[in-house]
Image (cartoon, rainbow, N blue to C red; front, side, top):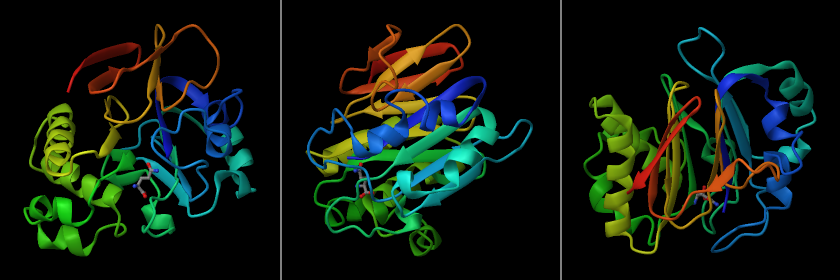
Length: 246
Ligand code: GLN
């Protein structure tokens, strides 16, 4: 069920997250170890976004193809460094389209967003909540998927000025109540802070002196990785990690 990661810290080549570690995101795409609740490989697209130094908005590249089939990506990932990165590989939920625009990260302004999981009973289970969104947002949804509507819900709250941790936690709590059994691991960043949730899926975090890495599965066997228990809200900046109950 999709894998995602977020990094904040000193600039690193994208390949240090996507390709080089023994259990890099590209490896998690075809050999994930902890796919709770369905799916075996993450071959239905991928996306990577990063904030170039000084840029107001992130750069994003995504595709409907498996990450290992993008012949240009390894060179791009070796030549591009960033101090803030959010990337994902997708395993489409049955019934949802396999298209580039359904792959995370979703973006708006300085934000990047990813969802690992499923909204049970989609779309009817969240129809009442979707009704509160501006019609324009519904008409311009990235794709007809549960992840895209979750992003529209979070984005509407961010645009209304809600603090990001509150926006993410509220959407997770409300959707979990409306659609019981949903799996809602969300990941949001503006390149300075990261907000993540665990509800139904794996997540690990590694916070070092000046960097923080959050990932569905640890990228290497290093001792600094800590599993994030279920039902948590993670708020992180480079080198700082705060984990509370949702
Ligand atoms: N349900 C979402 C989709 O199909 C996310 C999939 C996942 O986490 N596997 O895009």
